[in-house]
Every structure is written in C-alpha cells, then in structure tokens.
Image (cartoon, rainbow, N blue to C red; front, side, top):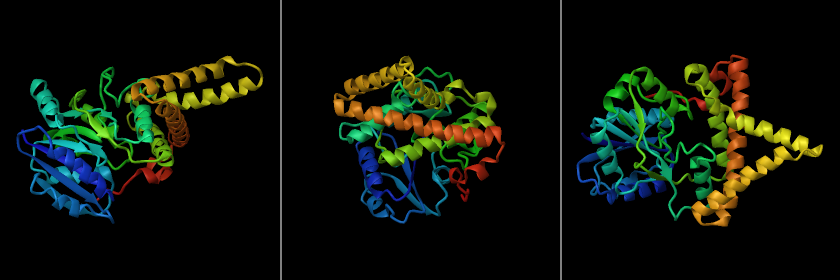
Length: 334
C-alpha cells in the first residue's frame, strides 16, 4: 500500500515548513509521497518546499483558487498512491502517525478513516483553549478528541484518509465549505463504504486563529449543518440543534433571572464552572481554564446563531443554499 499525503495550502508557507519538519522525523520506514497543492496563494510555499526535497518525496502544484475541498480532489487526482491521507496545513504530525495508520488498516481495513486532534505544549493559551472547546466531551461530545461513541464516525479533513477506490467512486469533496467533510462521509455511506475513527492517529492541530476568526469559523459550521440536513434528512440528529437550544435557553434564563427566578441561570453557571475546572486540570493552567470558558461561549453562540439563520432560510423558507449563503460555496475548477 502506497500512501499519498495530500496537503492543500493557502498563503501559509510557515505552516508547511512546520508540517514537513514533523514528517522528516517520522518513524515510518516505507516509501510514501507528499502532494502539496497551492490553492492560488499570493504568498507561496515553493521556497520552503525546496528545502525538503532532498529529505522527502514531494510533488508541488500551483492552481487557481477554488477552495480546500477542490484542492484536495486535485491533489488526489495527481497522486500515485492507492490510499490518500489528508492534512490541513496547520497540523503538526507525530512521528508514529503513519505507522499507526498502517497498523489499523492492516488489522481491520476501512476505506475511509478519521483521526483526532490535540494541542502541543508549545501552543498559545488561546490555541489550547480553542482546542479544548473543539474536542472536549463537555462541548462536542469528544468527537474531535477521540471519542468512539458514534456508530458512524464522520472524519474531518484536517486529519483523514480515503482509499483511491472510494475517492473515485464518490468523486471526492463537494464545493461546500465548511461542511464538505460530513457531506463526503454521508455520500460514502450511501455508496456502501464504511468510515471509522482511528483513535491513535492523532495530529496536533494548531488552528492559527484569533477570537474573531474563531467566531466566524464556528458560525459557518452552524450555517452548513441545516444545508446538510436538507440534503440528507435521514442523517439529521437532535444533537445538531443543541447549540441553538443552548443560546435560546441562556436568553430565557437571563429573562427569568430579572424576575427573580435563579435556577436556570445557575445551571448555566454550573456548566461554565465545569468547563473551567476540567480545562484547568487538563491544561494545568487556570488561565487556559478561563479562556476555555470564553472559547465555549463563542463556539456555542457562533454556531447556534449560524444554525438558526440557516434553518430559517433553508428549512423554513426553502431557499437554495448557494443563493442563501454564497460564501459557503466555492466554484469547482479542477
């Protein structure tokens, strides 16, 4: 089995350097290739790549900007391997990653897998707080952090693998972003393919974003979900509504507090207290615990508002997604 590592990048040469540095020290001793796809960047990473060509088997392509999903498809079409491993450019890869993936595929083969993400000690306090918000069982149910409770795991494209056959049958990622990951997973299920979590296939996801960018990101996540629910209603789940219910309930609890009814707002304070305690213990820092509370509030309110807006436009008003939210769709060019 030949692995092809697919990495789309947009204006982030510093990220590519760190990612390639982590692959240089990989303990995987079999041949594999790395395919880097520059998605119309104005700040290219070709100079950084040149410094690694004597250490790694790298192919580099520059294409017109058409989004991360289309760039991944482009890279897989150009690849020589029969199994593709996809990373976001802001990931750092543990040295044992490829070995763990091969061990999993050898023991129990699957045509599509997803891995989890974690934070390095070198990450900033905000990065660690956002990582907690995105991976904790108290927020997302641990989906991104390695939980295996889901009967059908939906891989995320910052850390996933897909066989060449499954890619060719499914045609790869669609042009929605974000939301291209669950869209691909569902289409694979419909084609009869299985997906699975590889709990030991961990990457360190740096997420070089500030609070404002994080709010925008999770808001887009919220907007994408009702679109996916309208495409695949049989895969809609009650848990997708939780962030919206959370912010509605929070607003009601504040209103009730003004009339002397304290219990609802105390429940919210208890929840935020648990976030603070668990994050402080996990990260060994009260500062990160406090920042995690901010991250969770931004996560729920950003996602919840986006979900409600999208639900009204897509589900209630039956608007075409590309018209309602043009910012979520790239024009496919590959």
